Amino acid sequence: MIKNILVVIEQRDGKIKKSSLEAVSTASKLASETNSSVQSIALGSEIENLSSIAEYGVSKINHFKNSELHSYSPSAYTKIISEFVIQSGSDLIIIPNTSFGKDLAPRIAARISAGCIMDITHFEISADELICRRPIYAGKAMLDVKFLSEKKVLTLRPNVFKAEKLPGLSAEITLNEVTSPDLTTRVTEIKKSEGKLDVAEADIIVSGGRGVKGPENFHLIEELAETLGAAVGASRAVVDAGWRSHGEQVGQTGKTVSPSLYIACGISGAIQHLAGMSSSKYIVAINKDKDAPIFSVADYGITGDLFEVLPKLTEEIKKMRS
Ligand code: FAD
Image (cartoon, protein in one colour):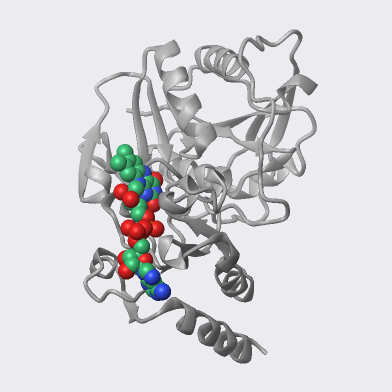
């Protein structure tokens, strides 16, 4: 069974991502269930409040520091983490299923000859084995998978597992200065919409599709999003058309999201879009076609013209909030 769990912490611009706290919390619960130990590894230069992750249930934090590790480098991160896994005797490596985790997890698994199960939404211990559940066929079915390998790498779908604080806990931070990291490959630039929420981490998302008719009308989506404190998402059709950036795309070839509330406006609900958002807690669809497939996954639906519905909805929510 599992003995030593290692959680890989993701930081961006020195700030720890919420999905990493979810991973620490989940690892901590799994550790108490399986009577195993849990520690974490974070790479970067200055990482804000690194010690605060202790409150989510990890007592050992290993910080590998070098200014070149500030941004993600697949080659350096894979090498450092894989070597640490071997040295620390970790047998289960948990990583958030973000763009970072999706890239890193298979690399580490290949390097340490581990099995790799990605995008887990649930797991349980059954007959001393870790059984992981993940969506397949673009979310149409769920698959229960178990590891056959001794070493295991798994990634957790963001926003599915809770980040729960356990007040009063503290951690020991071990600082490792890294000299000459292997920077054969590295991320040199991350383009993001300034000051806006990331769909992968947002608790509420308002998404627009081709029904919005053009980029000039996206202010309707943005206004509702702002009123709700939500992130703006988009279908691939509007990203391909150049109306919105790829960072906002939800779906099979975009981001997988699991917010509490997903509002789809003028989105038909193609299977590739559903693949990225069908695990949202509540789905609201606004579409003028009552037969649009999006209604088959929606908890609440409004059959209507979004150009009439959205301004009224935004106004009503503003009134309620004031
Ligand atoms: P449409 O399908 O054109 O739907 C527009 C909707 O707006 C319609 O339902 C219409 O009734 C409604 N509408 C029109 N006017 C109004 C109005 N005034 N008020 C209200 N409703 C209105 N798609 C993704 O989204 N994400 C992905 O990651 C993705 N990956 C893909 C990967 C592959 C390999 C392939 C082949 C496709 C992928 N797609 C993806 C594309 C997907 O198949 C669809 O083409 C796309 O999702 C359609 O986008 P849409 O719903 O915005 O547009």
